[in-house]
Amino acid sequence: MEQVRTFLAMGGYGGFVWPAFGLTAAVLIGLLVTTLRRLRALQDDLLRLQTPAPPPSAGARLGEAQR
Amino acid sequence: MNLHRFANPGRFVRLAEKILPWSGALAVVTLAAGVYLSLFASPADYQQGESVRIMYVHVPAAWMAMFVYTIIAAASASSLIWRHPLADLVARASAPVGAGFTFLALTTGSLWGKPMWGTWWVWDARLTSVLVLFFLYLGHIALSNAFDDQSRGNRAAAILALVGFINVPIIKFSVDWWSTLHQPASVLRMDGPTLDPSMLWPLLVMALGFKLYYVSLLLLRVKSEVLAARLRARSLAAVDAA
Amino acid sequence: MSGLVQVIGRVAARDLRLALRQRGDAVMVVLFFVLTALMFPFAVGPEPNLLARIAAGVIWVTALLAVLLSLERLFLADHEDGSLELLALTPTPLGLVVLGKVLAHWLTTGVPLVAAAPLVAVFYSMDATALPALVLAMALGTASLSLTGAVGAALTLGARRGGVLVPLLVLPLYVPVLIFGVAAGDAALAGLSARPYLMFLAAILLLMLVVAPLAAAAALRQALE
Image 1 (tube, rainbow over the protein chains, first blue to last red):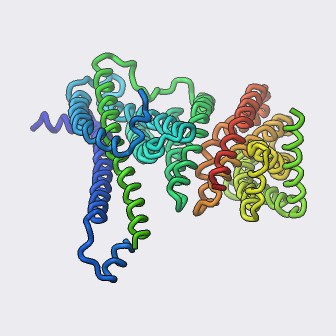
Image 2 (cartoon, rainbow over the protein chains, first blue to last red; image 1 turned 90 degrees about the vertical axis):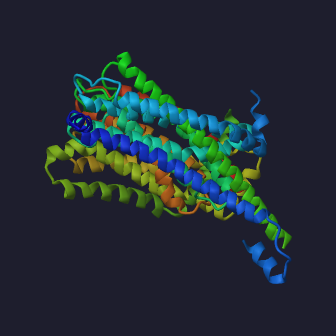
Image 3 (cartoon, helix red, strand yellow; image 1 turned 90 degrees about the horizontal axis):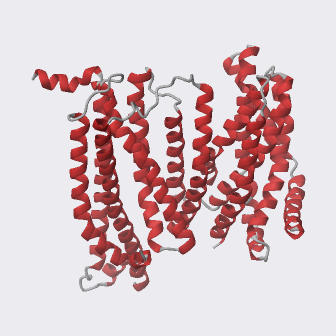
């Protein structure tokens, strides 16, 4: 336990070292997450457009075109 | 290498999907190794103590900030001169990532500077140049999104990227000069200590990890841009058909 | 060669004639410059030593902002009334047109600013021996500012919020001119030679004389597509 505490304290600089690494992780992971989310949304949208429409009534056809 | 083989977006996406698992896995492994080396398997500095470990994220982030800008400049040239269809997408996909690295360089620089110089911001030559680079990135992103016509935005941003790229050495030179004028000669350099191998390795591994991360993320993001373009085309076609 | 100069001259003359009809524009630029520069003593106090110390910096920053404000009208009017499109259709290289317009812009913006700078220097108790270097630096610098600004103005033609976008694009590129311009003034104040800084400013100007017309012309062509 003492060793863990010493490690976390980083010789007194813990308040600077950990936020630095933490921010780095946050930015790298954050960029990845937003990228994946956008990719998934685009893939879903494309799938929706590719799925053939159900037997069209005039209203449904119009609705699909408007998207 | 004939880049025009990859001009076909569909082909690019298939290639990207093949590479991604490998580059992604490599990135994770390298970054993990880098973090281990940075936090556990390297010594503290006799002058800066444990705070020198911040160097292992700050310096690679700053290197990536410059590297990505160079990629954007190359992509911009490719787009304007050879009209390579993927070039615009590479630039557009890279800009926010480059801005992210620049932001990290600035903030980790602040976190490193506070214990070293007692203040959150220091007009050190490197930090100041990175700050200007940050605004170059923001301008690029703003310009590429400032037009209703996406392709107009991309091409305007491409021109801006090239003009910016030409000016970057000049900006760096002027800021370097300016900081020597306004700061005392015995300034702590932000590279930290002269690098002993025990400190060089963590740095290089982290740098490699960042690069692999960027490549993987870029493949994902360009794939997104290709899909987005496809979506726009299909939506337009659907409207036409109805 | 003389043909090129003639073209640039003709474009510049046309813009100058238009500018003369709206004399107010150049006057407003100078007024903004002087007025903004006069704000600082109210902010930092009237102590002459402090003011003399920041004089070169204040003059440069406010001149820079004044140039920024005047950039929007560089291409906008011509773009809106279609004359830009006509100019693009002529066999004249668009880069030369840009040079002509920038020349006119500098004559109606940069030169008046340079002329007004000594007045501001007086308000800042700036030593008159520094003035020749400062004026020369500003002449060189404002020309670069006009050139670089033209690229920004061309890139944002037809953009949403183009007016706010131009400073974001252009200010980072202005940093070297600002640094060396102030350095020239400060060097002269300290009794040192301003020559190295004037040379840097001249070098930047030469570079932008080549780069800016090319970039701005490419941007204009896109705007017209």
